[in-house]
Amino acid sequence: MADDLFNSFMKGPDERGRFGKFGGRFVSETLMPLILELEKQFEHAKTDQSFWDEMNDLWTHYVGRPSPLYYADRLTQHLGGAKIYLKRDELNHTGAHKINNVLGQIILARRMGKTRIIAETGAGQHGVATATVCAKFGLKCVVYMGAHDVERQKPNVFRMRLLGAEVIPVTSGRGTLKDAMNDALRDWVTNVRDTFYCIGTVAGPHPYPEMVRDFQSIIGKEAKEQMMAAEGRLPDTLIAAIGGGSNAMGLFFPFLDDKDVEIIGVEAGGKGVNAKMEHCASLTGGRPGVLHGNRTYLLQDDDGQILEGYSISAGLDYPGIGPEHSWLHDTGRAQYVAITDTEALEAFQLSCAMEGIIPALEPCHALAHVMKIAPKLPRDHLIIMNMCGRGDKDIFTVAKHLGFGMAEAD
Ligand SMILES: *Cc1c(COP(=O)(O)O)cnc(C)c1O
Image (tube, rainbow, N blue to C red; front, side):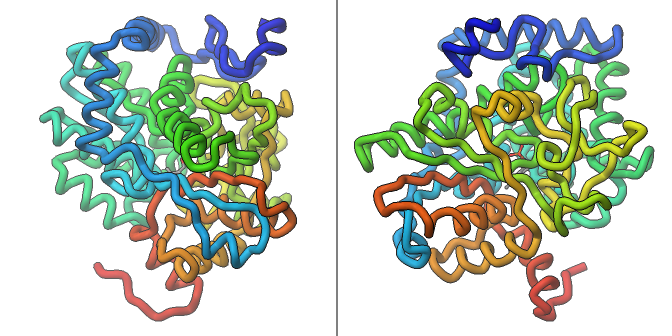
């Protein structure tokens, strides 16, 4: 593999599911046959034209793809430097990029004859996307969600229930996303025959990180063609926010071998990347360990205990990051930076005021970094930022932080 690395960043993972020393398949023996069966089906689907025909048809008619690549002219003028394009994945059905991947996994599940879909969710966005596609295909859907998150994210819990999903509050551990993932894995082992585990980001044991990346890569493929059509050349810089890293991997992957394209992932810096760990910046402030079946950078204490992390944006507070990002970080192909809550809130308001787009708090982290670098770059420098979600879900959080009195409906 060493030789390949010099030629291409797009050949990973290797046959053991490793991206360099990251990734892999750290699972119990009972889970292994399931993972191998999934891998076999995914390998088959990759080159099966009928699979991709079905995906493309649903992406077009159900999700609303392609999403536009939009030149943000007022934002560009305001910042006074680089030319800023937004990849508008917030316009997808269900309001974010998550559905790109969910569709792929559920089509695969149906082909494998599975009738029951399980998923984990933190803020509820992946749960909503999964419940949506399950309703569309008449599949049973069970969503594991930390009890703490069930309380915090009532509107999404209600959405999932409206869509026919069963939401199971997880009280083990500290009742957060990490614990929900553990319970989902346990469910999978117990219900092998009819159940498919739909993971929401580029994490988990191989082949999930690769599979989710491939399904999300539609973002980068479209963006590349759209930029060629708009400017006749490739962009200079790509920027995306990172929770587990799926929207970022989706944008980045098709450009990994375009050596002149600079790639920047933006982690949630919370209240600052400090010793108290009031952030979710796994690469900037963590170190390698094993979680959810793969080796990657994690937030952990000196004894290797996984820490919860914190961010204003519920969708970014996963204590790990997809293993491919860890590898891109260590090889230097991509850079990773952190943005604080305060900076993200400023970006939120700028997007509303300059472009009439109310963004989710997750991509506001990417936008805040654009605000830092764009003014210093020349006017012919082309930036693509992934606007991966819309902000309807976040208006109460933002209102609270801006001191705008607005009681949350209950
Ligand atoms: C879930 C979510 C994220 C974080 O997940 P990634 O796998 O890092 O993309 C970011 N933005 C939005 C809008 C989300 O819903």
